Each structure stands twice: as structure tokens, then as C-alpha cells.
Length: 199
Length: 199
Image (cartoon, rainbow over all chains, first blue to last red; front, side, top):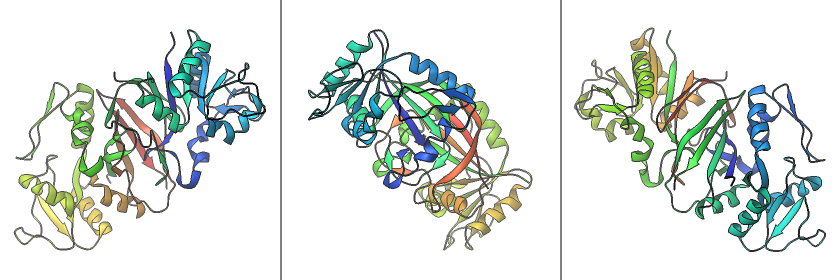
């Protein structure tokens, strides 16, 4: 059975997005500051070029991923990544109302309306032995609150944004403690840190 | 000439203090979760017992420190550390009104009223070739804004506090970028990360 993982690029002052959805150029600078090309499966997302260290980790983690769970906001904001998620896996979308212009499930997207636990269960069934990655701050928070998360990964970026959306914003049951880091890897302009959720 | 440094223990969601000044037990757990004793010069602060890795770093950094700059809030809150700062160096206190019950300067405390740049200059003169450490979030923010800081150190602790005081809260001129990490050291329950301030 694979793990359920979430993560994101975070500023030194703890924000995964800056004020008024700013700062993404800085938070994701490491996607483009190196020489190793990472192709993406999305027609809308060009290949990334990152440092060898970051690319090695990303390839390993993407290779271990069997399905994604995302919120409807991210799905809409990215315009469904042009039809296929960059990570080239089936993406389970948690939504109250599935879009009318798509089948309820195909190899690209599966729409689940029965809540976050059902979405994660569906993704686990698709992923098999591989991991499930949960994306988007609100849905990651819901998974953590529901005890569904096994690990979190932080890509710590040396910038102070001064405001914005904190990691796990609005989390219930704080303080929440984690174990580790279980991995700590220094890239260029980013520190990759992996923690295990404490049970 | 030494460097001017600040830093602090920070939660995964970017807070150096939790809601209503809570969370210090978790943020400073690494001060007491190991076997290596670190004596302190303060009669009010008992020796710490931390992991060998953290102790080695702390001893090195404390040994390189020639003077401190703190705000009046920290000085009052700690009751002047019982007379001497734990790091065993002269502490420059930035204040509008020096306390009546102490000399303006002795080997333990020096009171400066002319602003943060004057306080740092005074500490540099005391420190000589060694470093100046700036403590307390507000004064660290002022030093960063005034271009007085050379490095910042973050002790990243795997806990989500859900709210509180962010690192460099209220910083002007964001986004502010840093170089590095120039050092990255994994302790027990804490990751020590050092950055250089970008000029």
C-alpha cells in the first residue's frame, strides 16, 4: 500500500502563496533555475529545468506517485491542466458538482462528490502500491484533520513574503506535531524537507 | 569585523510564537531533548541538554558571538536574565527610557536610546572581531529593514501552530530574498538553516 503525501513550496515566513496570490514566481523559481529538464504530461505546462539535485528527487517522487487528489479550485484555476496533469497520473477531483462537459471518470480525471475520505480512497484504489499525492492547501488541511495523511513535504524557499496563505491555514487541532525530517535535501534556491505525520 | 546575525526557532507554518504567546514548549523542545549539557551564564536559566549535533553548532555560534542586541520587551520579559545573558556576553538593550536601577553601561548591559543603528554600532564596537547577535522579532525586523543584518538562522521545528507571530512580522519591502542555505544541519527535532541576506 502506498502513502498519502502532500506538500508545497513555502516561504521562510511560512506562506504557500503571497498576498493577493502573489509570490509564485519566487516560490517556484527552483522549477526553472537549473539545467536538468523535467518533461510534463500537460499540454499547458512547459518542461521544467531545475538543478540536478532537485530533479533527481522530483523524478523519484513523481515516479512513486500513482494518483492525485486535488480540489475543484485547483482544477478550475489550471483549466484542468489542458486535459492531463503534469505528473501524468489520474487525478481525482473533489467537487460538489462534477463538470457537465466531462465523463464522471476516465483515465485523466475522476470526480468524487462524497467528501475527502472517499476521494482519497478512490485515489488509493487507482494508485495501488504507489503513493497518492494531495494538492491544494485546503484539501491538504482536510486530509490532515481527517487523519488521512502519512507524510508532508516542504520545499523551503529563501524569501520572506510578509503575508499570504499559511501552510495548512485554518488547521483544527493545533498544535500538530510531525516526525523527522525523514529526508533533508539541499537543492539550488530550495531546501527539500520531508516529515512523517505523527499518529 | 564580525557579522550581524539574527535567528530563532520557527514552526513549520512560519511562527516564532504561537497564538497568545503559546507554543514555546514545542518551539524550544530541542533545547532539552538530548544528552549534551550546555551551561548558561544566567542564574535564571538552567543548563540546556540537547543533541550532540545541535550542541556542537550552538557552542560554535555562541563562541563566535561578541555581543548581543535586544529590545526592551525581551529585557523586561526575562527580568534581565537575572543579571547576565545566558550567552555570557554584554547585551546592548535598545530602549526609549533606560531603567533607573542600573548604570547606563556595565559589562552585563548597555542601554542605547538613539535607535537600532546606534545599538548595532555599539554592539559591534564591543564585539570586535566577533559576531553580533540580534534578538527579538521586532528588532530583528528593524535591522533587516535598515540593511544592518548579514545572516539569519532558522531552527525549523516540525510543528504546525496554526497562528501567532510570523518571522519578521510586518517587514517592509517584501518580498525579501536571501542566499543559501549557507549551512544546513539536522539536529533532533530541529533543522538548523543559515541564510545570507541579499544585498
